[in-house]
Length: 195
Image 1 (cartoon, rainbow, N blue to C red):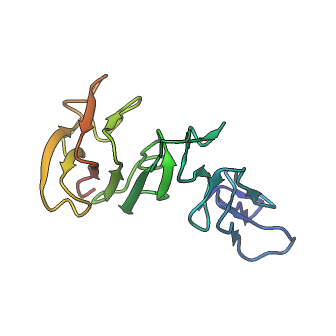
Image 2: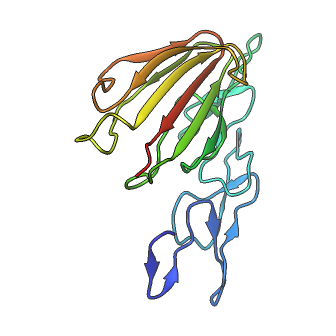
């Protein structure tokens, strides 16, 4: 759970509680977001932004728009189009599927990840996909390299056919390397060994 204050639990991002004496946080509706803890309201996404899921902690650019989804989403010029990249995810890591971003962050969450965890992110786009790590830290650096990040270039969204692009552990962190897929699909897997 998120940090508590005098026995009460703070509402996590994507939720709010707008009355006193509340026993549960409410989820932000589609088209709204909240990126802070302990919120009392959700904010509406700006023009050309949206949140496609209830409980969102951020907005994304809508189809036909591009940008960083934080400062701006600009409309495509006449004669051009933008089908934004999407990220779907599953597993034990905190994850919010998203769409419309030109860049983003993949994380296993705050603190240490429990043993025997598995997280998957699938990035889909109509153009090249590039992943690089600005920060890379796997737990258990003194034991065998049992925590892994595997990057696969997939031929389709189900990743039934794939080419392994990288297998990263505490013994071979990525440094400044970039990993690219021109197939339209890139899968990132994170696994930890039994604790």
